[in-house]
Each structure stands twice: as structure tokens, then as C-alpha cells.
View (cartoon, rainbow, N blue to C red):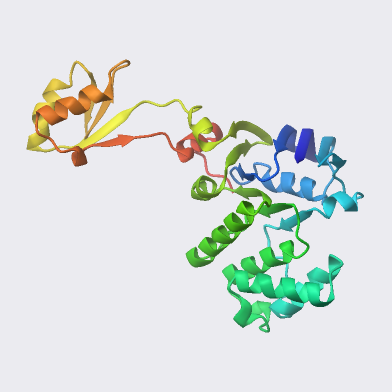
Length: 305
């Protein structure tokens, strides 16, 4: 559906995107996960036609994507990172303006406005000024505006920044429903839990490149990982520790032991040993690789503003 081929974008001496190639299939819920300044918003703006690449090519269903190709851009909807609404106007007035910009009018526009407000639980605030809305309500209204023309591809550029948990969940459920109905979504975020919940495939972007791309399970296979089992330091586990010395490394903490098995040691043997000692399974937790661990492994742990 959407293809980027060796796309590069520079701002002076800063290279925001560096030869990015990517293909998004129809019906995907694709996550673009990266820290601040990684290139997420730049990629979104190029796809939306708000900026032109310095090198490379973008196509949507085989048509070039550019500011000049309005036919291709008509299939796009954009939910920008910053609120794009008229604060002095009501929710309904805002949606009517955006709908008319898309060429909609009459009963069709009225029906789509009503449908969007109902779906996003804003129907009772339709005549209220947007400046009286909470941040979450404004975000939800922004999403309605981006969907009035029924796009095939929706670009969501960090749409839950500063949003309360209830509004975030409403946004998630709404986007998941639209995706099940066939809408292709590209969703940029720096929240691991959002990417984990929503996205069928994830690209991790950093310094203008995409070093990791795949489903969540495929991505986690890229993480250097050492199996670890934690269990409490109690009198009952003392006998277990004594028997684990030849099986791996046991590191004592203030309240827990951390056991890292040696290569080739089967965890089934560990649990057989705990059963033989009469230790219940609830005492033991196995650490597994996480998207957050992979993200930090690829992008580093330093804070970025």
C-alpha cells in the first residue's frame, strides 16, 4: 500500500531521515516507535505531503506521494502531534469546516459528524467551544476530523500525548475497531505499552534510521537475553540454593535470589528440583525479554529532550 524507498530528509546539517526504506501493507496497524528526535514526525510529515524528501521516493498504491499529487493524498488522514482545531469554535463547527475542506457537505457531512461524535463520546458537547474541552477531548475531536473523508490510510503522530487514561483507552478502542474494519494505521509513539497493545508490526526508529522491524515476537528475538529466575530469600529456599551451584549462578539480593542458568541447562530440571523440595511455583518468576528492554538496547538509556 505505502512504500518508502531510500528516503532522506535533512534540515541544514541535521539528517532527520537517513535512507529509510519501508513498506506498509493494506490493513496493517503499524507502529513507529522511537525516542524524541528520532525522526517519527518527519517521516509522518513526508507521507502526508507536508514536506518533500531530499532524496528517495514515496508511493501510495503505486502513485507518487507529494504535495502536488492531491489525488493520492486524498486517501490519507492525518492526526497531528499538536492539536489542530479552532478553539473559539464549537466541536460541530470545527468538524463542519474540516469536512467542507474535504469537499463534503449536506446530509453526508452531517451524518459523518454525528457518527464521529457518537463514536468518540462527544455528542453531548457538540455545541461547546473547543477551548472548554480537556486535552483528551480535543485529541478525540482531532481524530474525528481526520476521518470525515473516509481515508484508506490514517497517520497518527503521537495522538495521546498529555491525554488522561480514560481518553487514551477510548482512542485505542476506536482505532482498533477501525483497523478491524479495514483501515490501515501508522501510529507513532514513544510509549512501549501503546505499541505492544495496538500494533501488528513495529519499526523502531532512531537517528533517522530503522534498525529493527517486525512483529513483537520477531523483534524480541533480536534482544541479547539471559534467562533469569527470581525467588524469595527464605529459610525454605536455602536448600534450593545449595543445590543450584553446579547449574548456574545464584546472586543474592536483599529480599530475593536471582538464578541465571548455565547454557544448556533445562528449566524443566529447575522446576523438577523445586517440586522435589516442596516449594510452590508461586515463589518463582521468570524474567522474559520485553519491548522496552529491546528499545533501550537499540536506542540507549540517555534522556533526550
